[in-house]
Every structure is written in structure tokens, then in C-alpha cells.
Amino acid sequence: MHIYKLENWQHRHNYSVVNEKGEKRTRYVLALTAITMVIEIMAGIVYGSMALLADGWHMATHVAAFLITLFAYYYSRKHQDDPAHTFGTGKVNVLGGFSSAIALAVVALMMCLESLQRIFNPQEIHFNESILVAIIGLVINVASAFLLKDEHHHDHHGHHHDHNLQAAYFHVLADAVTSLLAIIALLAGKFWGWHLLDPIMGIVGAVIITHWAYGLLARTGPILLDASADDDYLELVTEIIEKDSDNRVADCHIWKISPDHYAAIVSLVTHYPKPA
Image (cartoon, rainbow, N blue to C red):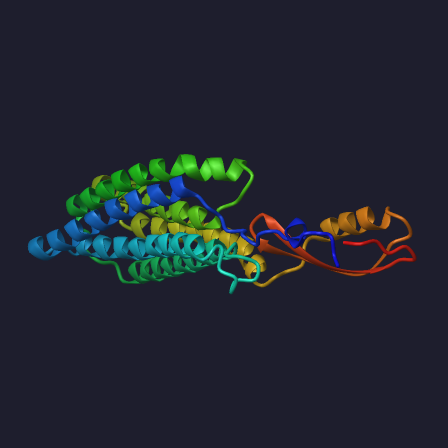
């Protein structure tokens, strides 16, 4: 009969990213964005302002992105101990970040196409209304950025990476940047007649957002696809294992099961096998 307890050799498979403060602040940002969206859409309909209406629907895309972020937090937390998830729910937040990055890329593409269309087919710009909308959008997004800023930077410099929160933060930054560029372009158009600057700034904003989206996709995509760890990491693990006795690594696979946790399958050849 074995004299060892199984509990001594067992461990939890919970690798979910728990960020209660980040989740709470994302709720605040969602509420702030949703309220602004409703007000702008209603004002656009009542006052017949296409600028207000368009910005209201643009806000709706960010509401959808924040809902993705919150759902990822909820699902990851609820199912973190579910045995159906062999390696836990560490990748759920990564999936949320990946999905939001795609949404960012779509927004950038729409901005670029609309800007190109306005370069070749200029439209009348209602400067006063448009500037007001852009200022409102900038104020809301700066407030939202400050709500998410501390959590984003603590996460970035801490011991874990929350791609889900990074995605929400980038959505807010993207909107703030587009609002700021719009204000600059609209003021230049109103006072100096530089009407072409408006669509050009739209393209500049689209390029910036695309850069952020690409960076987030590059960080989350390999984790979702179980990409192998870096060669340097594989060599380090192999070196540590082979330092012990006459061990030789015949095969080694290392991949991420969360932003900060790895899993490994290692095949060893040795004359002196040891218990696990």
C-alpha cells in the first residue's frame, strides 16, 4: 500500500487573471460611455445633427468592446475551478484582448475608408457642432483613460499581464486620440480654411490605432495558438534539466496557458531515473 497522500502531489489548475479593480473601473467606463452614447444619439435625432449622431454610434462600438472585456472577466472568474477547463481559464482574458484588438482594427479601417472618401468627395462640415462633439468626446475619454490608467500601468509593471484590460485602455486612448486630432483639424478648417486637414487627420488616427491593434494581436495571438516558447527559454529549460545527472532532453514542448504561466511536455533519456 502506498504511504504517500495524493494531495502532496496534486496542484490547482487555476491560471485565470483576476483583476477586481480593473474590472470595477471598466464598469465605470462602460457606464460613462453608454450614457454619453445615448445622449449624443438622442441629441442628434432631436437637433438633426449628423455629427452628434455619428459620434453616438461610434461610442456604441466602444460600449460593445467594454462588454467583451467585462464578459471575459466574468467567465474567467466563474469557471476558474471548472475541471472541464484542463488548464484553467487563463486564456479567456487573452481571448477578450484579441477580440477587442480586432474591433480596434475594424474601427481603424472604417476611419481610413471614410477619410479617403472625404478627400475625393469633400462634404460640408458644420464646424461649431463638430468641434463641440469632439470636445465632449475628448473630455469623456480623458476621464475614462484616468479611470483605467493606474490599473493598466500597475498591471504592466507588476507580475502579470492583463491583455483584456490593455484592450479596454487602448479603446479609450484610440477615441481620445481621434477626438484630439479632430479638434485640431476642425479648428484649422474653421479659421484658416484647411478643410483637407480633417480627412488627413482621420487617416493619421487610423494609422495610430492600427499600430496599437497590431501590437495587441501580436501579443495575444501566439498565446491562443499555443505557439512555442522562445528559443532562448527552451534552451534555458533544457540546460537546467541536463545539468542534473546524465539527463538528455529528447523532446521538449513549452507553451503558454495564460499570459504568465507555461506548460511543458518533456521527454527525457537517462540512466538514473528519479520519481516525479
